Image 1 (cartoon, chains in turn brown, red):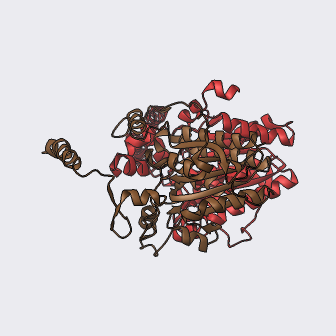
Image 2 (tube, each protein chain N blue to C red):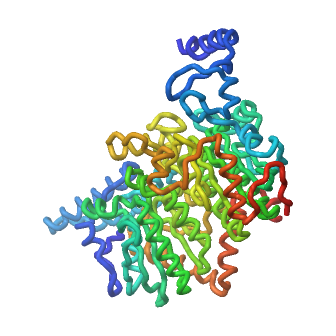
Length: 293
Length: 345
């Protein structure tokens, strides 16, 4: 019976799926409404009718932020893979391999440097599709590399956080990414360059307990789940239902944890304004490039 | 063997048998063979006391020897799950036991000056071997009342903000910082989230990394995730022999990764959470040996060897100027887990 459930049914499903391409229509997670994928893509992955902010892939996020979608890739440092030789129900080494095949990325963080409204900025993006955006050696090293690049090239650093938390399969070394990335943030701080964190859906666990909560400015995308402990863990601990909107972007703004909640359509201009103001650069003139360091 | 009451106690040393009346030892499930032998000894002692005619001294000695041997063998090969149980043993000496026995003139300070005080983190100034020191530690409590008071050592944002306040003070006055880490993790509650648990932890780690005075952290029992690292980001990190240090509790990992909470033993093993693993990964510097049978068998000895290890760790940092102290700490964390080629550059 298991064999039928595990093998035959998914096969049948995958055959059926071919007739209706998955990416033609998508369902709004909030309203359940079916929307044409192309419309959502053209709208920066915000559902036009409900305003729900869908997750956006790291490469798409990077090109959506830089002028004309152009940026220079920053090489990601090499790291030890699977330091614990970990396995749960499956080997971690296999999980990594699958995630790489599925996404085409090396790990959960991607970096780029380029111009945002004419000003050079370094951007890091965490992609939730790669093992829940989890923070392990690779992601930690990438974030540090991003911060170091910003120091070297004298640019602000913008981090788009999205993560379920620490990469548990890397055990204690994933926990060590909390202080390690914090060292990176301190280096940028000492170089007196702005550090802006954009908290996207979801940002939880160890990630919030380090670089994601140490920005000079915190921006959250509407509706994003942001918190240290997961809602389920809290419910189990206190044995109570959580209040409506708990740990959502707007709730964090209300409690003083983020500076603002910004719609994706206004994000680029908000970031541009902030970067220019904090670096005392002249006001934005469309088409004009500020000199790079 | 090893009963505190039979030994000479240095002045000022508290009586652990008063803390745990008659030292009713609570045995862990895997200690059953030892428990049986020790129960037998007690039985014979009682018999000898009531009936002078029977001479059981020799027999008692023999069984005691056997019990000691069994305990030694058991504790020389503890599994990670058994260590987890030892690390959480209710009679294991906790933060306040260490403070009461290693620190003189201890002055506890309270409050984060923002919202409240959190008794899950004990903080203050005192003297360690005669010199001023700032102490921060998670306190789990030792009976129902104190456990509730200290929230089982699970801190809220106010605890970490109090730690930040004291660390900044210590830095200003050039006083070294000692962290005693023993927590299952930061408290997951509505209020804690509302008041920025994540930010409080991040900020505490940040301040640890910025200290220009030496800091030493000791993982006494449980080093649970972000709640631990917030205080454990130190120049030197020591860990008791049977303590554990992990990114998530074995139970948590079991329910998330295995989707089966009964797989905690397997999770404890695969996650590599023991002090011996930590040395191998370069995450800690020193293992502090525990008395045979664990720190709870002889808290005095455990605390004494911990104090020696702390003194040795601070001695190694002596002579570094303020920038060098901070740089050494940062470099150490940056190098952690890196493949050698990169850490060289």
